Image (tube, rainbow, N blue to C red; front, side, top):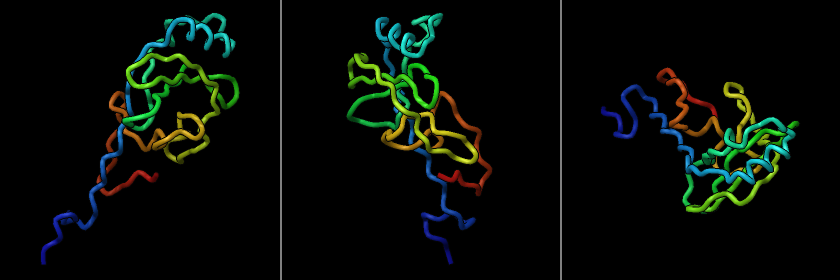
Length: 139
């Protein structure tokens, strides 16, 4: 008897590749970078240190891109958003996503974000070590 094509001979279904993060990149305009630093109380920060942004949401084809700009005291952070093909023109102070994972800690996105949590997504800039065969990443 042969196993169906979709199930390997070891009897375990293959682990699907996780979805990837969006990774759309932009530059935060200096006035917004200075505002973000002021909102967070970082009076000695350099706007150049927070200008390069990358969308960390699950890969998407529509809507806004979102990127973390700077943490704020408590469980909030300054985020920026921008439409496809444009630059940021908005800063938002958003609460942190409260989802946690026993092996990966807290989600690094904002509360109510679309798509998967950070530990459920593949970030090609920050690859995780491969899991031993037969183990699954609980989602």
